[in-house]
Amino acid sequence: MALKSIMCECAWAASFKKDSRISAYYWARVKKHGEKKAITATAGLLLRICYNLLRKKELYKEEGNSFFEEIEKKKEQRLVKLLESKGYTIEKKQENPLDVKL
Image (tube, rainbow, N blue to C red; front, side, top):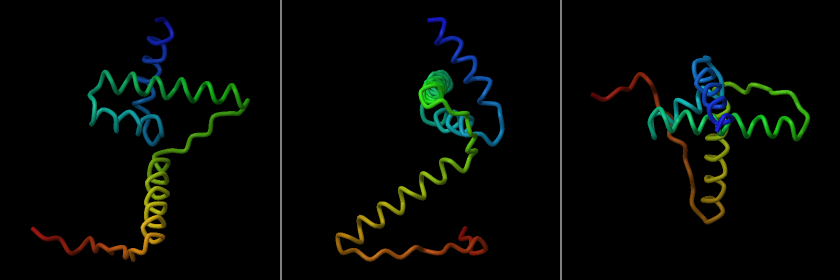
């Protein structure tokens, strides 16, 4: 029980750091699940990060907010490749930010 409370405090403190992977993870979870579950989920993320750092004997490298954008980009590329292998043709629509329809 003590580990959970310590990790939750660490997650709460990390959620206030700007432009960090952990903060982005927390705020994404708050939108879906609420603050309490988001803190617990972020504490779990911190615990997994700590475990892997100790297991691999590495230093922590902050990836920033772009971490999740890169994951989405890789996911998009994987899905496009899958659809193209099934015979579909994919065209990416270019959005012009000046063409706003109200």
